[in-house]
Image (cartoon, rainbow, N blue to C red; front, side, top):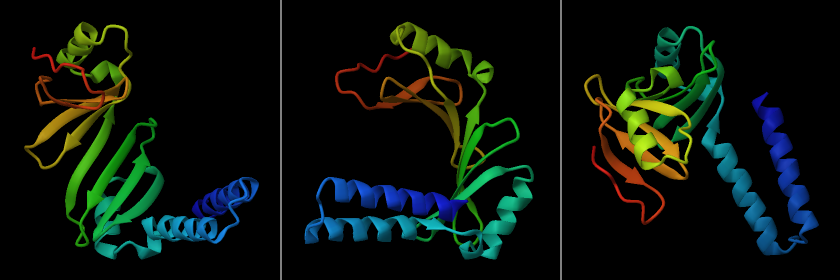
Amino acid sequence: MYKAQMILALAWLYQSFMLQKLSTMKGKALLLFFVFVAFSLYVTDAQVPESVMRKFEKENLQSLNVNWKVDGTNFIVTYNDTLNLHYRNVYDKNGNLIMRESEIYQHNVLPAISSYCAAYLPSSEIGRVWLLELSETERSYYTIVDDVALFFDEEGNIFKWEGRPGLALQQQ
């Protein structure tokens, strides 16, 4: 399925370039660059080291829609579970988990996060909320609301925001 998606994307890009009359040498170079980058980022299961694949499969028995990418010497896998929640794991080349992002159900969002968003962004809707685990003891949450990434600690206290300038960081 991955190869079919990549071929369709490349066909669409080629058609877009031709329609915009970017058949110049610069346009062709840009297209070739995109093709190179696209193919270098995605890897097939066969290209993932056995130690990484074994670790992932052991910890994620019921994973669906598994897609791998490479980032330097690290391997990034995105997948869904049987309830259609989204996940992203980053492994080093030896299969050690560096980071995990896990989507959490809306009804499992910490009350402090919901309260903060309701108080300081009342006209906005909270999107997906993610649990970010950098180690067994280092955990935080984040969500994106109106193009602003809000980061919360393990208790739900905001500690950082990134995005729209001028939005004041309100402490609880």
